[in-house]
Length: 343
Image (cartoon, rainbow, N blue to C red; front, side):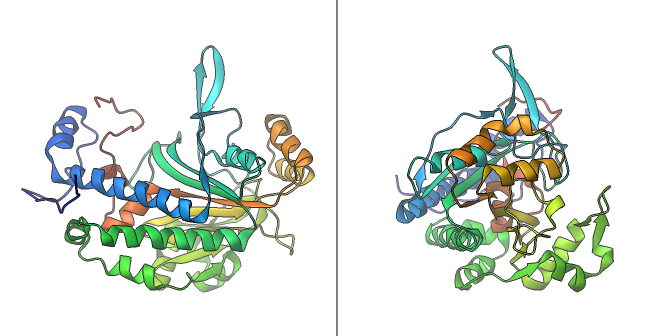
């Protein structure tokens, strides 16, 4: 059946009743907002597969549990893992499958991707979900290669959205589609290094970690977005970036970047360590037990390979598409911490 523009009947605004299971159950069936979310998500997923098919990057199938988390508790950690017991054994729900994507690249392919649920243990708020959908890819190549991949991917998503009859509904909710058209027209996205951002913003937009390392605040991210519209924040200091990111030639920063758009960080990307020894040094520096990642170290030792990858939070991207301000409104079937679920 051909997709057509939705006929809006009643209030187009999200009902924002996700904290009340019974109310949300009714709203999810009846409200036009959730019908739009369903159809837009379908467009994004279809466009993702179309894009990667053209790039000869293949989809891979993986479980949702992992033995090694990619956001461990240690220096540079930015989230809480979700530990469960499965069949009597302790394991983690996936916070990312980046390591597993790297594993698949050892199968003689140039790139691999997936879209699947991701789990985080911290409290939800207007920008964070406990369970969201990750569009992740890993490729053979380096930092600049993955930057280009992400930019082309986001252009392809916005082109697909503008080509669907749903564009009228998107425009109605978002107050226009100029932001989608502007992104499509950008030959490359602007970049600013972390060090440059400190000079540009000033100290008031940063806080210090317990180790004394500067961390940009949400207000700082917003200031950069207000100035650039869309911008890569690149080359973070080593200790505030994850242990698996490759060091820059200066030895002080790593080859990683966050794409700031909409409400803030929406894409995280980076080049990975090539050798097991580099991984081991990164783990020790970040005070993460090496034993938890022994398989990852061995993989790099036996099959060294230069790779890079990224993760896009689909809900955060959709927030920008719809020019909305609360990520909790974007789930037809919410999965929020300390909230009972009906659907």
